[in-house]
Length: 321
Image 1 (cartoon, rainbow, N blue to C red):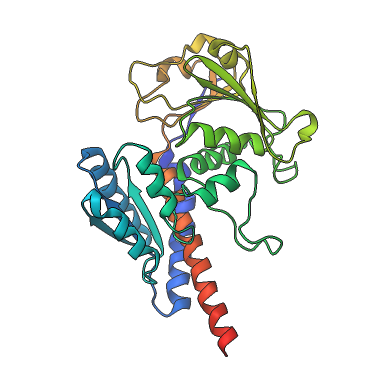
Image 2 (tube, rainbow, N blue to C red; image 1 turned 90 degrees about the vertical axis):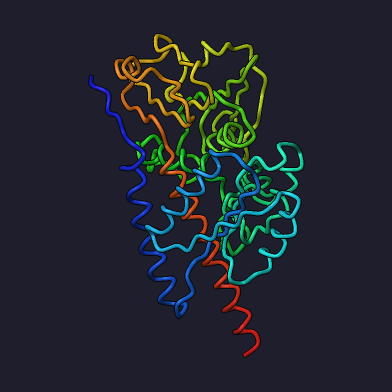
């Protein structure tokens, strides 16, 4: 059976169209208030500068205003606090690393949840790990913001019909075993939690061990559990229906011979962790990169936060009337 290779641009197109239409309606309904994303660049990393340029172009394509602010890292905290309370700013993102230490985590946590398009502040991370999907229970009108790259991978899996829409929401990956070769705090561990919360058995592969994320037999637990395993990385790959890789090294390649026939292979690293020619002989579907889907999720998160802020403004006006 021939492998189907799916490119990020094709997957992202639907979301870009939805964002473009959402922005048009938002501007029309608000009397001309354009959704505005502020990006803070406080390092001298050429890759961050390139990503910022790419973000700006992508935002322009869908009608979002992107304001890149280059600041000294010692000034960043004050700039963030000012943007948090500026009503003309609807979303905030930071190009990391800034200090390259736990101080970066502090910066993530001082971005207001009302404007955190990256979903990295404590509120969103806590809710994600504890399978809390809304900010305003029991009303449940405001969904939580999910970090962009993990969310992009979820949307890729939905696009590939790995999620089963016949199953109840929150359990649509039930019966799937997914291996993730990466356990970083930025992508790998959050992704494992998200997929396990949606019903999958997730084998999280890192240097030295394999952890299993799951919700128990019959999805008996409300949120995912984590357990130690005696599995090797090779054994995890052999068991997986879906293999997702994110090792940021050109030297790492998945041993294709370990993969199931008909596996789904997805790579989110800047490096290609699969040998494209080899994996196509084994996989049913192969997604070599997801960058454009990640940017679309950033825009989608911004539009959602913009809507929440506008609703809060209208609600305050109604109370005063």
